Structures are given as structure tokens and as C-alpha cells.
Length: 289
Image 1 (cartoon, rainbow, N blue to C red):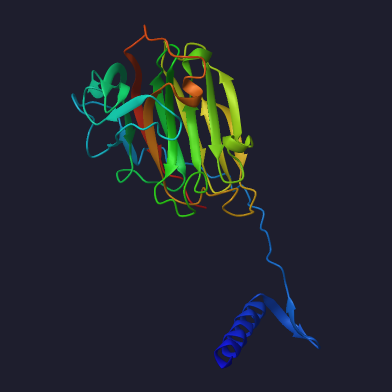
Image 2: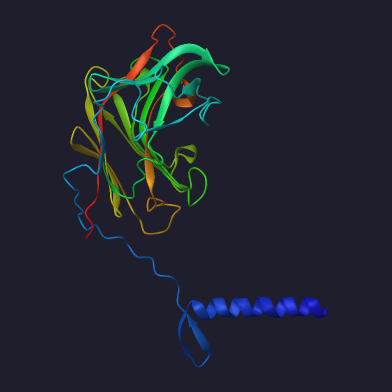
């Protein structure tokens, strides 16, 4: 009982300290509690440097530069019931004539029926805020699911979707030329149908190169297709469940096969191989204010 009494007294002491820590001044009744203030973020109209701080123009030949890129490898569906096995070889990601080509193929590997590549800048480019530009031409046909997107490097707020995701471009082959920009957070994500997203008709998405861009600042994530703003998600100032975008993120480029979304209307097995071609990737730092 003495031990229990000490524990109870200690608990009261901790609570008291917490109350005092949250108070501001006192009155005749003791400490006055002041609730935390929610600060609405202000758009400072940040600009971006005009020279890239990091870029890949794909001027080499053969494998993508190891100084710029790493790979996520393996199969298992990647949380979306995808059907590809991601490799780290030039069989699925190669550079020639100024173009990076990510190729998805119908071939068996690691119990999966297709191979592809999922390239990442994790450990090579991990950025907090800035402008990302990617000029790309997309694959075509049912079952293709290319993506240009961003994930948190350290997952400081927890596993997906708590630490956030920024989808600069997604396209599913059964819905040709409709491209999607989305953000996902614990409060706003697709599995609870609250995601922040737009769909934009982008004629010739698979026959010509188009410019996909995100401008990311402390105030908002803004998406642009071919220089035209199509998306904005503003920081509500209510914490990480809505806005986990105050930590470093890295870029991903991949072509998935099938999956919950990409394979929703089946897979056309007559179309393979399919490729996403990338002319360049550029990152510009945000200018602090």
C-alpha cells in the first residue's frame, strides 16, 4: 500500500506539472489554463531558385547514375495487389539518347508474372520544400499504372499514410489521358475516401512528353501540368494528421502492373512491353523568407 500511495502521489505531481506548463499566469484560484493556439499558416509567396540544386538530364548511357538513383526491389503486391516484380537492372531501367526508360515486361520473376522498375532518390535527394519538375511520356494500355510521386524519407509520424504521400502524376491505362495529382495524410487519404485529388485531361499523355510539377512550401502543395496549376492543398495548421509535409521527402518513378487501381478493368496481355520515358528530373530549392 505504501508503494501504491507513492505511485499515486507521483502521478498527481506529473499532472500538476503538466497543468502548470500549459498555464499562463495565476488568479486567486491558482494557475489559469490557456488552451493551445492553432496558428493558421500564412502564404509568404515563396519563390524558387532558377538553377536546379539537383538534376538528372540523362546524358549518360546504360544504367541510371548511382549517384542519383537507388531502387525499391521485389514483388508481393506493394500494398496494392500489384503484379510486377521490381528489379534494379537495365532490363527494366536504362538510359540512352538523353532519355530514361522504365520498361514493364511480361516475364516471370519471384513468383510474379511481370517485371518493372521502381526508382527512388532516397539517400540521393531528400528535400524539405522546393519545386520538382519531371518531363515524361507515359505507357499505354490496360494494366499499366505509371506514377511520379514522393514519400517521406524518415516517416517521422509513422507508417503510411501518417507521414504523408504526394502523387505528382498517376495514370491508369484503361482511362487514357486522364492524369491525377493527389496528396494523402492520416486525415485525408483514399482508403477512407477523403483524399485531396484532381483529375486532369492531358491529351497525348502517351504520345508526347508533358511536364509534371509540384511546388511545395510550408503553406501548400501545388500541382502543375504543362505549366498550368491544377491542384492546391493548403496547410490547415492543425498538426501532422492533416499536414505531415514538414519533413524531408524523396522522389519515386515507377511503372506498376495491375493492382487495385491499375488492374481494375483487367490487363491486356497483348500490349507488353510498355515504357515510361523521362526526359529530365529537376529539383529547385525554395528561397526562404
